[in-house]
Image (cartoon, rainbow, N blue to C red; front, side):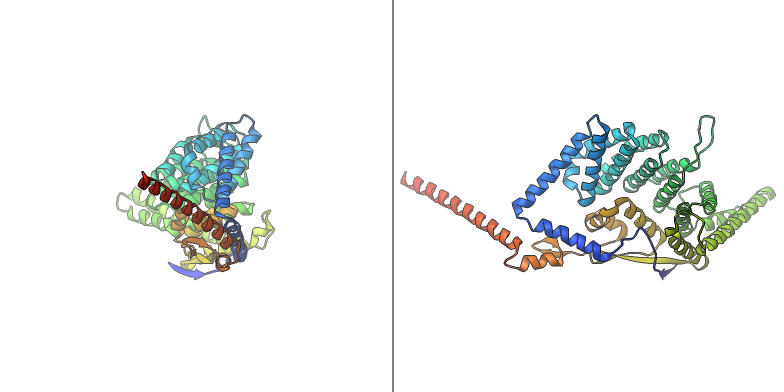
Length: 445
């Protein structure tokens, strides 16, 4: 397919490259401005605070556990806690799962987010797989324990992240996608109580479902499931809530990029080799698919030029128009939008719908921690093929401002380094004197 440069009014993108650079530089300068021993004390203090937060997850008072989870999330966003996770992985996972099983809606939301951050910090492997296996049942049950929208949205994000990181087989991803789908499109039965999902929940399902869809092979899902999802997503394009229409449009982007409608058409035409009745059914199926595509094309065209007034969030109107203009151009001409954003002086680029959906999802999930993770999280770097800019001074990753601090003989860093070297020299001299005295004593004896 073709590619096209496009300017997107994407709310999920970073607001300012300069802001991100300054944040990155200032935090690095503060940490580097300390002496070696001071840095160690700060790290020890952070570890002790995290240990205390995990201990507080055992407290009976729910508000105490909520504060503990909030502090853990803040710590995981500001730094990649690899050493802490190595020590406390099992404890943190099981305490968070306990919060999901027994906590308030707020506690469940916080615990879900913490588990997602835990998976992202660990990256793919046995532990990420353990997170998925241990969490999928409690998360599924939590969906049924109440219908508070923010709680459901947090659980959906958690399920999406732990499946993205820990899922290996397509069946595992499809299972998570089906769990999500049931929230908005349940299979009716004698023991099923249907509750009309809110716009927030529908939007969250669409976002999480399409995020996982980007990892799937189009041939992995059954045609029935594809057709059901496309039909439902088409119906969402007519909803009043703009966030719902946008989420449906983003999901359809991925489906069209995977060529799923073309797949159905091919199968329908290829199946016309049996009896007359089978041939009639295949023709009916092909006409249905072609009609569905034409319907979606008209819906997308209308949404790309919407005048406003339909939907509550006017600030999203420009993004909706831009989104559906890109979808329309893809459907008509096969062009994918290309996007680029600066992270620490390097460009992170996307050239497919799937990459853009993934980028936006991680941006929303990590919030202010996205830049830090993109600069240091090797898993996310691998996902997007991103190589962060590294300035090496003494083997450390530092900014341009920090390099100037290193070069200045009067800088705090150089003074601290001189003090440290003098201390090491004195210790070395004492050891040598002691060693010499011992040798002299041995010779006298």
